[in-house]
Image (cartoon, rainbow, N blue to C red; front, side):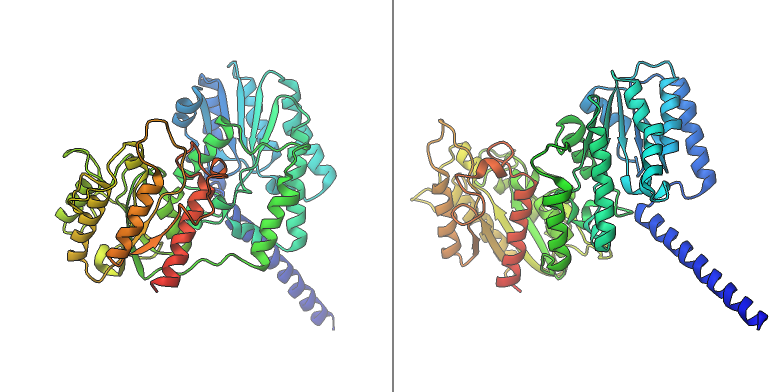
Length: 488
């Protein structure tokens, strides 16, 4: 009997131990700290503390997630600050104070302390105990903010991929959001402290291609955008009196909706999409662009030949207008996508443009409008010095080479006008629609039938012309759904 009871106890103990170990592994995977190896962790920390004691700098960046893309050069370029970026990812509140002690004892005149702090990690390191949490943050963070009132403490909260939130139970989600809000509220009590949370932006958290290596670490381009939005533009700041409660209202509503009724995005993995256009497609790089959204959300392989500032009509022999781009494209025989920005889904090999079902997409008109290029030449419908003639000529050349491909013309959205224009943007949209009918091409009308209207375009356009991230996601979504409904 004793032997049996002992075995049962041992079994329960082992099971409990395994559960704890598995829980630790899961948390480690979710947060993907680069300092899992204690030796590496200690080496990075020792290197950081040594540099903080000997180097000259005016600001410092500390992070509980990968600091890889928060480089010294980024701080220097955009903020003009000589910033020491710690290489070790902090694990708990005590490590925060170790670093801050070293910073403020260095003899440097510190103007800013930038940090990416994870409230959930801090909560877990305090054994999920409210009193311990408050005590640790008071001793290891708030006390420094209070002691150095002339130093600006700017705290960036994590902005993980949406699956991090969706994997939580309702109870854990509520607890996690509560500690996020608690940290933000406490920081707002200090005049020299700010907290920022960009993680509620749907365009950011919904695209898996915005992240690499973990649910938390955004790619280089997205990290730079987050940097600019927060530390430069001071967007996404959380305050207790903010009308928009990031955690309690808008954000929680999005998470609840996506958990119970997730947004559907088509599977376009069998498609190669080739884009020709202006800065609406070209200006925003990587997963932040319209083609990048489509690859991340629909698994299409995209080739982006768009060039910012280009017109459909030809303005000069050496420019980057549509006829010039088409000459270069066809000279490459369309097989090697030289000159294209390529987005290929993970696990898929880029086999060239002709390797899968093929669709060409064209979006021109804004720069023709601003440049006063002639919409058409009644005497010559193929005159490449006009909008109509250039579209008709270039697309005809493509059709000769790719007769089985699909072709989609997409009109520009509304933009702010200027006093110097001779024509209306609607003139160019009408020409595009006319060509689509005559050449039997698909047409997406983003001018007359889209979420961006003449009345609300200031909400969607960054500068009266270029779409912001929400608008680019809307454009990408329209393309995805259109292809699924009309081409599949």
